[in-house]
Image (cartoon, rainbow over all chains, first blue to last red; front, side):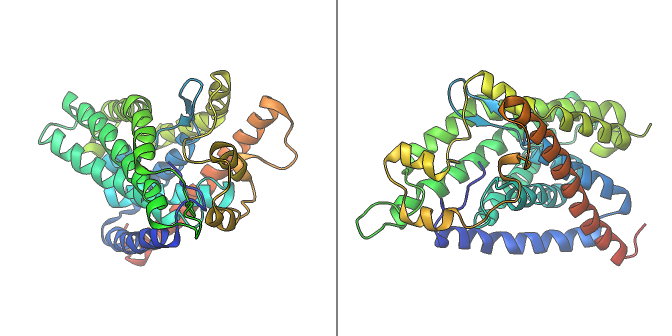
Length: 222
Length: 112
């Protein structure tokens, strides 16, 4: 899901930066008001966890690979604004240092993966967990479902941004200037692997860590 | 031991295990992620490299491309060494980045 440089035209990546910059600013403002020194280690842990978990590539046999992200999990533990910052930090380091995801696409990738993962995941978790106790079974099930759905929505955003490129940016000879595949190809290709594999991995990972936190430090889920 | 400490230890173990994310896909003959091809792969897929992609695609030269380090050995073992080192380095840099950002915010507002 890390869109490289050259896949999105300036109109798309510019728009995504324009969406993301205010979100980062709002997150800084929110954290400035609400972040306690005690929570800082969890924010740092979340960011490092997201960085490392994204290195665990999972194969589709004979095909492509993908990985979990952890955005929903981090949002459940430290809130969506902090989670968005944590995952954004991991994505920015990946792009700058390791060329995983493009520089021009940092806005797009941070929106698709960090913002969507954190906010959609957190919203769904809150919805499904309702007023259950921090140690209730309902909590980790809510986390798993939220993680599964949010990762698939992230994947859909990515597929749409890639898939609209041939429509909006053509060379004079009519060939695409950037990502060459249309929506009819990008959406099924990206959606299938996330619906049937990577989303499930994300869900299981989220459930396991929430269960661990329930046993060891349930007040984090308060 | 505090939960935070346990989680940090878990994270270090995870970083040390990161080559599994390289070895397991290799065992199953899986390539990179869909839609993250390099220019050569694109050329193989559709027969040409789109103009804009060619111009913009090599915009940034990452110092440690694709989680490799200069001078790492060849083959899966060498790649795994580079992978572990970049996992540790990347996790440390990500942590540092966020930590100082957050401390700055929290300290600025004088909360404990």
